Length: 575
Image (tube, rainbow, N blue to C red; front, top):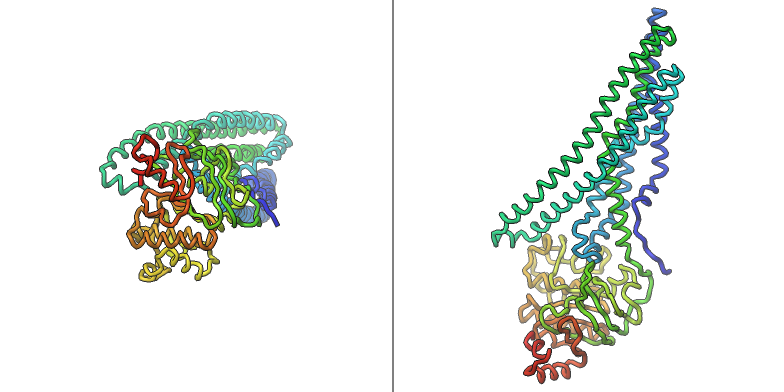
């Protein structure tokens, strides 16, 4: 059955917790009712116990009040635990889409996506959902209950409380608009700092060897001051409104006591009502004050959710349908043009040819001619701006990501291996991979004996980036990974750059094996030895296709043109 995959959005993930949120709402309702325990106890003590001088009544009221407080505490703990579990559930549901988005960003946006960090945004959402921020939001709907109770006690007290609440609400709105821009600025500054730190860490060998540490530190220091001022502005504004609201709350509480005392003197209310109304008014305003305290986290969460939603939408590019038949016959390139992701400059155009099952194509040309750009477009990691690249008549994006991995093998110029065992890297971390298939890929790449000689054979941990292997060994493990599963189309970008004679012989045998089993192999070459196992040659120069055809014929034409002012001279020199 054909099936289309879609990324989960933040709203979708939160929506799956709808029943849990309703449960938290019910708990919040009970908690807010229980918050009246203190005012009612004070009211009873002042109006009943003191007037009757009844110790038994005081004991009973105290025991009831203590029980209600204990119950309230249990519910508060339960609500905190529920929020923590909601945050982890949302995080769990979004972590895989975020990881996929993080991996796809460089392919889709190129350098423009370097400042976007889906994982960091997801962590911001998780921290907020697991904090007391949502609890304060759940308490806000019950504010009218407290204001209504104050009105019941006396209308003058109610109007005073309502006026105070309205003023605090206005301050909350002002805080929202005042904090939005600085908080966004802080996020941008933080991303810029992380970008330079990550870049320096990736290139630590170059930085240390070439004395660049001091200069990069100076560059980083130049970014700290703007970050400091933006962070200071965001914090100062938040603290200002938080302090003003706290001050206003204390003034209102005293004003409520003063007004209550006046009304008690006039014998319009009792002393218990005076105390209870002050406590209830403070409780009515407390959720607003708590919300203001959580406001920076709320804004950061909202902005992170917006960014994450946008990234998940942009990276929801798996338009393929699961279950389509895998290609087995031909590769057709129709007037193809490509560029780096997110960049307007066209790096390669006008490429057109066709290969049949069993063909091998060597791509040659000078440095910067567009060979690697074309290799990336062939495997679908760079966009095809014009024309099409088709396998058995279908463009690559018609297959799902998982299915594409079954018929495409790719060895890039810069071989990146992952933390794990040799076997896991060859098998592309497929947990269900057949050991026989792993060994077969290693043998095809001519690296089986080398792996067998490692301390733990195929179970040897290679370290992050394959740090425990030499450059040549990493390249051959990368070749075995590209060959794993006998893919129909295998694209190799300068696969012999770090290989010795033995490695080049193994590479030639592997390419012939691909052709003999009915696959198609495409190799980007700077050295003529890489062309030994191909029957077709494509010449690219200055971002254009110069020639395509049978290897012997094309290379013969190149030799004849090498003495003239033709592109063939440049290509001949490149080889």
